[in-house]
Length: 389
Image (cartoon, rainbow, N blue to C red; front, side, top):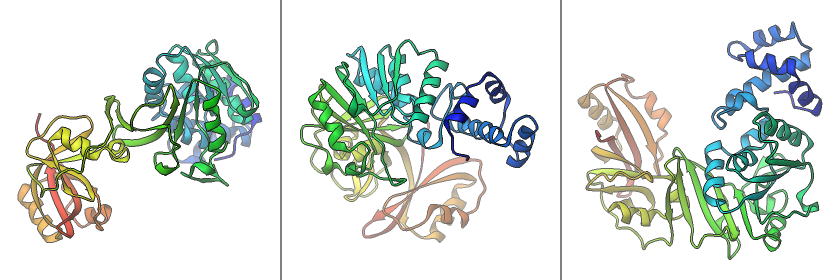
């Protein structure tokens, strides 16, 4: 993609460019699409239009009105999913009528706060992203609720009682999970807690938990089974214990963790806990809630005698399990007949994609799931399927 510039943003927000974007479908061979654009636009303009159409298509997974917005590649990658941002605004900041959103990027969080009825001070020091932020806020009809300031928030004073901060997590162009590598530095972000009533900081879910300061709470958020972010809370936005939430079900589990769960060979059902629960260190508490045991003390798969419907864990009925042998697995699949096979893995050296290439690809019929794990000191396989509702 061609790097965006302020000149590019000025062009993309023009009426003619917006009309082109509404009609542009970036499907098909890229050179052919670009050649068609260049009949009407300069080479730079054609590239900006084509790239923006691609970004809008990619952004549709995060934003329901992506076709009205503008995007920049790295900022889109860092932006919160609409569902996660809306949940934060609605649940974590519910008591507050206004919020300062520091490091607003292209506006995902500021938009969610505004849609939740809050007055928002959106601060972004990057001129390009600030320009995109202004456009997105206006395009979605939220300008009356969102005040955009192009500045380094460390140079500002603000009156909001609570602050949401999303520091950049890249160092020299590389993504980092170390808090000391953030920009602005994490120490500067934490210093905000002395100026405001509540502080909520969005961080990478793979952060080192030992870097989280004393007195702060830590939570993890997943969306449709994918771990999305960690949230550090201070002041009025600190919870008493570590927590995990799975969206869109809004299912929440809070600490403290229970003592170690029992360990048992696979029973009738296998559970795959939500990644937010695992990352929050609440696996044993979930096991107790499900009446389940771990199949291995080092593996985050649980097993029980019944299937309890819980949004914090997927459940499958175990059909077969044994030490991993390709010949045995082929025999199982032949016996069970045509099926589509999904493969999940924890603590097992077998590569799922390579394994699928060596199995018959019949498809149709039943949908089975193969769990590759470790049991009794050796690679193990568990073949299962979802219970019929």
